[in-house]
Length: 68
Image (cartoon, rainbow, N blue to C red; front, side, top):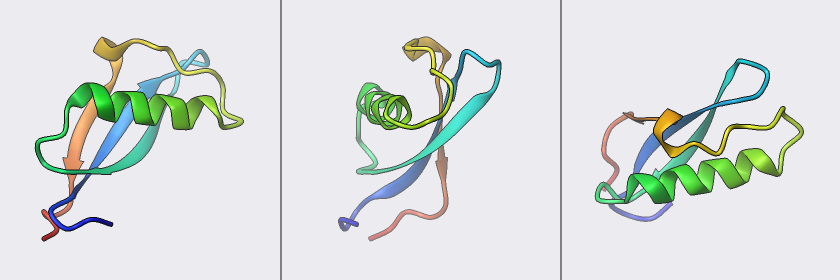
């Protein structure tokens, strides 16, 4: 993990009606679109039901302390 990173959870709604959360480590000034794209591609390659490719439907939340 890089210095200056923080952890965020990116929740993606899926075709089965659930939300699937993915952990993303990124700098505090990372673009939300980049966090979404990373989580969506990670989810898309998994065995879970397909997540919706809708940026506006994703929830991004910072968790834990800032790591420096």
